Image 1 (cartoon, rainbow, N blue to C red):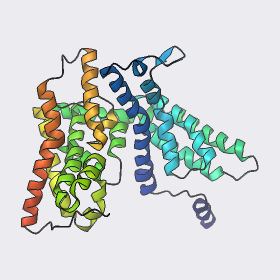
Image 2: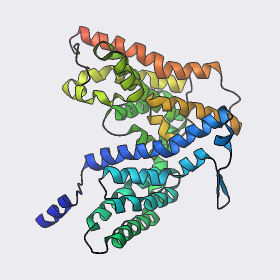
Image 3: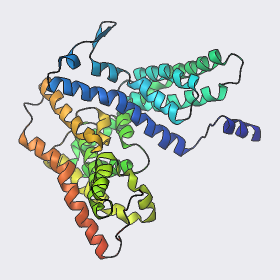
Image 4: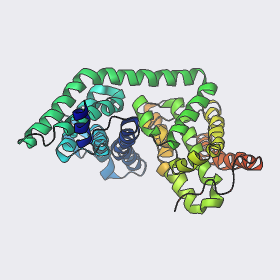
Length: 364
């Protein structure tokens, strides 16, 4: 047993929640961002600004026509798997072999493909790492083992994993439509908390396929965290802090949260307020890519996702037009309420001594 542990250590195979639930999951979200999400944004820009090069067919593969954005989106499986392999410190032959594994897992996983890619790419990567450079024909054996395990697991597990993910996601979306107030609170708070924790809210939303009202609630929770922390900590961090947290990530506050968890109260309370406002009053839906539901205001990807969903609904005939009420809801939920309510609530916490000046200062 001791020899096996030494072998795993030598191969940098660390079976832990951090390695798989934080590092790999976070990397998967980056892979999704660089493929599916970027492809969606490119398609939206092309169609809205009538840029011919972005809307024309640039490739035809087996009778399927692809635009520039379409090609980027089609590579989401390989991008996720490679990102996971990179996070797990996979050697080159393993990393490159994961391209095939990611494509297979995502394709066979269907709408729940991201979850299938997460599980299968982790197993294939770790197996590939263990066999890497153990033989004199490494250039043959390592890709063969990595791909064989990945393809085999994809055939066996990907459909079930994909169905399970979509079932959970569909239950959440069904429950949100049935009880928009209570589920608006629950989804907003939980996804918002996930965004600030060192895990990936975007990957969670993508894996579960959270769209519709549930996606809108998730977006509200993420915005409450990002914009809330950005404006709560303005005295400590200035405009640089507003940009780094409001357009970057509220995860920057994680170290300060560990020191004083009470600084997290205001964003969590506000997410519990804006979530049901989004679902019950503005009927804010995320009908773009599910990954955008967990992005908040990061690069304004969440807002672009909502807009893309509006355009998709108009094209499908389920929405007549984008109204002023739609825009008001998106802006109020994403920016105005978090920017006003979080500093107000945090001010009350300061008066009772739970939060002090300097508690949210970011390291420079």
